[in-house]
Length: 472
Image (cartoon, rainbow, N blue to C red; front, side, top):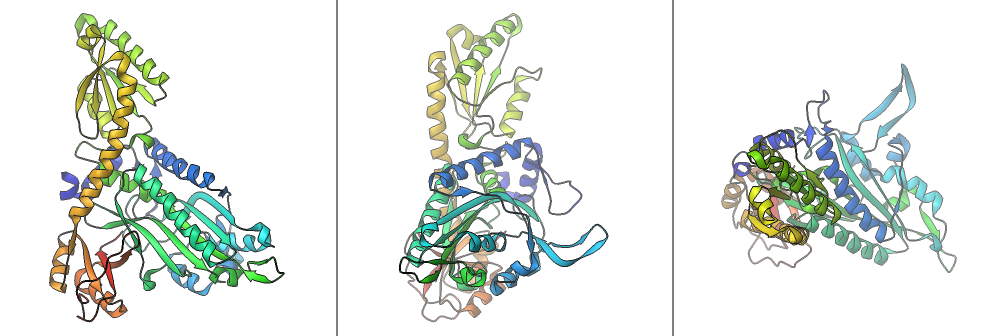
């Protein structure tokens, strides 16, 4: 498949031809989301927001501008993001007395307000989210959707009475993201980051690293237990039932909508273009009439009838009765990744049947007109399951073991994700990066893996089984 041989070329071509983004905007790292891409992103966002709403999160919208004073309050946080900040220094021709910045993430925008809102234990838990753009001055080479200076994301922030309550929230956040990613058919590793790579200001960080055809991983979601670090910095306290004033414990988590969209394209797409999970496809079914000479009027009328029946069944459906040839229509809708194509020709008209073509595997089947809606629904279920199964199989095939630096280096060079044993020494992690170009991404938290050999670098006792990969 072309995406495994030349991912960069394939990805750029699909983004352009499938009308996902246009990267010709004259500022590097800023892209235009075209209609098809924006609609998919909107559906991914809605999928996530529905789950957040159902778990007692409240939607809010905070300003994009953050004061320099607020940003500087958490020392580790500012150190982690300082190099990536877009500063606002002027209003017109006048230099501002105090600089502001465009949010790279919203802890320092939200938490001064949390300190105003939270007074007693009755105000907890506080659980809010927003779906917005964030801004980071990426110094590495930018790439549409995967590494941008403005990107779409959803971030949630919560405050709790104690550590145990925050830990429960971490589990809820992981469950919500797992739900979204599985419905998108995405395969990933759920990894706890090493301490040197955790979110700036967090006690620990958990990340969802999805595979990419070029062997790199794509961080599509993160969950951070902040402990009391930000509460202390911003004075977020509550009065307990016994009258004692305590710091809240906090959790924050973010899902990159842009990166999730990139993962859907990268994991499921093929040489024909996009392959979309039915739940987020802007058009789920396209009806294509295939008229033949004197039967053209009758075939078009039958196609219209099929279209109305599919629409009535609740599917997002498009009737392509344009002047293009059937072949041109097939090519176009396959490029856009529409999950199901319903073909209607003279034989279908005569036998009162329809031909169903699945985008994911290009299989075709013929069903009775009256069974079309139920057949499409069954097809949707099988598509979602097969996409997830295929993606997990690729992830398994991309992952290899290494017990020494030479085999690790070779595996990373061959675009693999590498499982190794590690002693947890930062120096050994740096050696791994220097030798292989890959990074220690962390150890799995969804399954327990015990090291069965010494550290891949120093040969001393290993403490963790970790995953090494290049990353976006």
